[in-house]
Image 1 (cartoon, rainbow, N blue to C red):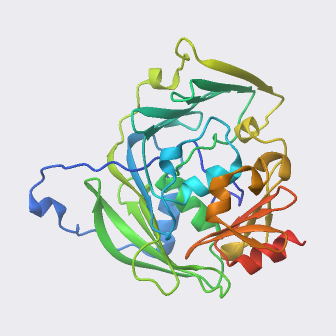
Image 2: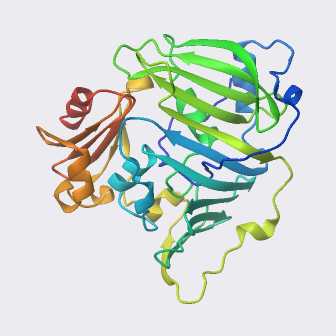
Length: 346
């Protein structure tokens, strides 16, 4: 089966997240659909074949990790990685996503009456914050990734989780469901790795296109998902090309950046690539100091949410841990703080 090679993409430009939609639909339409049987391998191949799918929709993302919701604080385009990581794993977020193909994507993250946009159109990437009235425009000959935002799409979340599959992972088709009015298969992944905090993952896979429509992740020892992201509305019509064109409103402060060669769009906010320590479910992402922003002492919010440990400060939840090292590095993983500290010492 062909899958994307394992790589780290900061939570990113085709995402999406939470809208409460009240849609009057007959009760029978919400019943779990009857679908032809498929094996886990067939579903994995169906997901892999969905990467070029065009669509648009609204996604709901929610996290219940026992942390306060910091989503109302917002963040500027290209904000520091520590704040972005904490924002992603707390509270709920709302976004609209438009995907016209591999080089045409737009995400609108809603912050009350304000919004943040990440728009990819060929070699041009815009990051716009209406509240801060700031924008970053990045030009690269062939950007390979998406710009970071506070949300992830079901497809992005599913790909990261599928990249973690290893021989000890249990993979089974457990049910069918309806997500955003679409018939879907439910595929459950159960890690066999003793060090990961992940107990199980359920992917809801569109029966027709293979696009992941929902992802829920449950921590070990828990019965309710700690993290979920799902479409509340989706259309597989190709979005209007004008959606991927952007002109900053009058009065917006614009920062221009040009990247050489085929530098990825992530470099809009990064000078060096993140690295990964370990693999599979207990992999730890290490973001270099010059990309992670200031030290913990520079941010009162981080000081409140984190605990001092040898070598830095750690944010621990039921599902994910974040270590902000004293040297400025940021380490993130679905593992305990001891594993992050060991990775930081390498």
